[in-house]
Image (tube, rainbow, N blue to C red; front, side):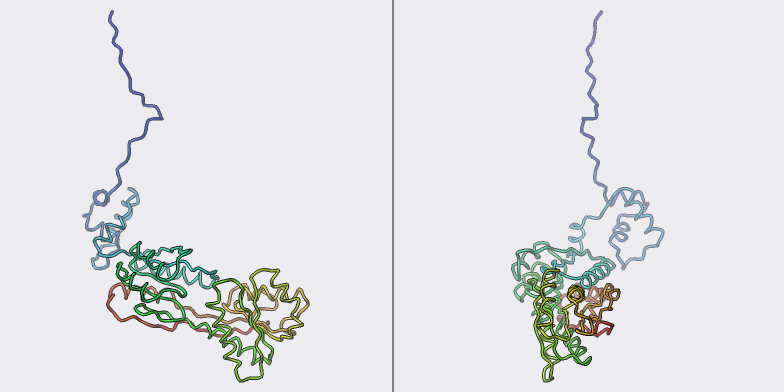
Amino acid sequence: MRYVMVQIPNKSASAPPAQRSVPTSADVARLAGVSRATVSYVLNNTSAVRISEPTRRRVHEAAKELGYVPHAAARSLRAGHSRMVLMPSPAIPVGPLYSRFLNELQWALSRLDYTVVQYGTLGLHGDEAARAWAELRPVAVLVPGQGLGPQGVGVLKRSGARAVVTIGPAVVAGAHALLMDHSTVGRVAGRHLYDRGRRRIGVVVPAEPGLEVYSAPRLDGVRQALRGTDAAVTELPLAYEEESAARLAARWRALGLDAVYAYNDEYAMLLMRALQDEGVRVPEDTALIGADDLMLGRLLRPRLSTVHIELPSGRELAELVDRAVRDPGAAPERHEVLGAAVVHRDSS
């Protein structure tokens, strides 16, 4: 009897699985029962073509079922530009107020079909940082703080950026500008303390590097408000740590101050706790005011007086970016956007 040896292929679990093909817009169109053009209109949120709501739902459901996502690079090639708005991450600590502003801005830009990308530029500054941003080919760049110059704006525009918007104290040639004069915050705080009868006024200046872009104008604003009066201003460097606040509070009586503007609510709360631990009464011995109008300040005892700062709305800034992207040849816009008003509570 003859035997035939037959080798059976090994189909164990160790065999590599067959690679699934990447779903395409054609696959979505077949599953949804529409044309590829309709898929493109729906997923790119094109407003120029009217698509019924049931059709939009079918396309979105088909894309979700297949795991299809549009190819950003291909979409950029078709449009002639990307939909990426780049925001360099601030190189300095930012508080809750600015974080809320960023969140609102990102939401508003996403409603206009832009993608916001935050870019860390640690170690890069000014025009050198602009070259790094340009490598990503954003359609717009929103630059907080200072450092970007006209040369950097030119680099960004030559790389395809249709809009460059600076958010800070000065205008940069070629860029749209949201001007924030932080001396206004110091002026209203200093005037409030003076009107409450205080004459020996301290101003907390954060010791953390980078914050001088905000703290220096605020200190100058207090001095402007009190210039020509009988009040004296004392600069008070303070690191944002309990030990630093305790050291300052320990020499408070020797300083002879009857009021203090503490840069913002976080520094004000830190200092208030240290003063109370040292037996200094707020506001009887020392009136105190912060800035930013944070919720936590209302929960303290005494409740914290503060300067309410009005930042530009994220929706308005998103609309500015969209206008500039649609009309890159338009003259740069300038807007003064920072408002400040005292909220008087128990601490002053």
